[in-house]
Length: 264
Length: 334
Image (cartoon, rainbow over all chains, first blue to last red; front, side):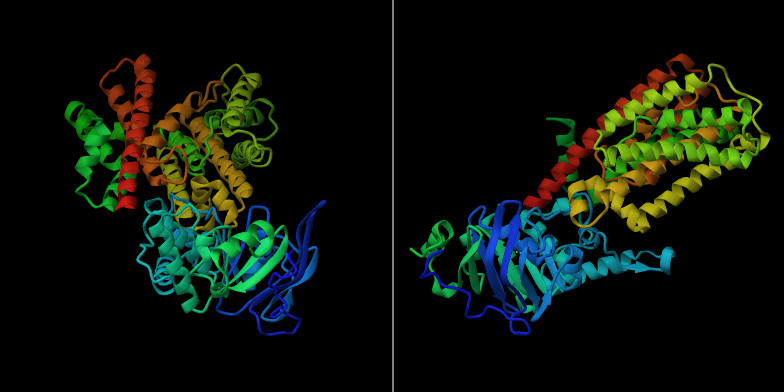
């Protein structure tokens, strides 16, 4: 890492610091002999769009998996609302208010939008073991999420297969919103999307922020995050090479940080 | 221009959603048309209520095997061993009751036949879900093992079964009632429970289902266990229908089961279809067979006709899928 590279020390969290919404402090993650992340710190402010970028193998996925509970750090700590947290699986991260939309979206094409949104989490009616899926509530809540939180016109009763790539991304985001998270992590949300679809997803991310969500975008595409993220963290070979305001960095500088860990 | 092209162009004026709903429920207009054709050519089928009642009575065991197959298909899997499970369960229980004389209580007999079928089905599910066996090869192996197992147990028909064991299956109202209740019960389960929706999810995309928290292994094992249960129920009803258990009981049911399920709108690749549609497929198959029997058709050719029906079902399925793809593509690009 370059000595003149920007650091994160200006807003690195400390235990009890209620400033950032979600933060990692001096996190290290080792898989066998491979050090995937080494001494990584970041803090994401409430209602911020924060992008984590890096080349393939930089540690983006590992960092994302730490934040959403898939992995536990080998060393270091995670903080949520200033309190230290340790997630023992994605369910615990979800319960704490962190939802992740993975790159492959994990949508079931043959099922309708509402069923996809609530799969495994259906509104129910009845008592105990005699409760059943409440379809009326399912469709109503799906419509509310799509209309209110995403501000999009997607029919909850239409099959997912009926939708374009951009709309499928929105459906996956809607599923994350069904758990009413505070933090939404998006993994490569516009990769393989057309220009129109990319704009659709970017506008939706802005809508999420307007509706009070904190958003972390994990990406290797600079086009994806420029003009969208408030700040950008650049991972290089498992270390945080820089954290910078988007307005303070050029595409060339970011690209240089991604491939060499140094500003050009 | 292919048939599906022409049909698609005709459908273009109809709202896409309506087309998709029509495709998913194609069995009912087909059943109506076939019924009218039979009414016009072999009216005795409908004027003779006895023939109709017998048709439904005889259809009950097949219907339960179709239900078993449909449950597997909805989960994106299939089961070649449905007939073998039905037959083996029936033969094994008959041996317990009438040859080995281990049990004489008819209620216990019913419990045994259902337990045997469920256990075989569960084993299918465990081999596929936990050991990663290919469903085709796994259920083909069980088709051979349990199809041969029947003959290993006995080469002659077993009679002298307890009256209480055979009587329910020998009563047309009870048999038809069990068939309808089974379909209704499963239709409710698949529509209104998390398990039912999980089966559709696994059938649509197993990896995606796992990613959203569905315990896919458990779901697959439960699917095959349920399938084995309904196969065994079919074996029990067949025992009551004939009054004896012959070694070739339930042979070849698997082909009719596939045909009825596919004609009924169950997707060959899972995730789509309704169980009540499969019941429509059962009615269609039974109606055609009854019409052939009543009209004096050579019984030795019935199997040929069944094969033709299966071929028709697959052609219909391919056409339907082709139209569906075009409708969806048009919708996405519009």
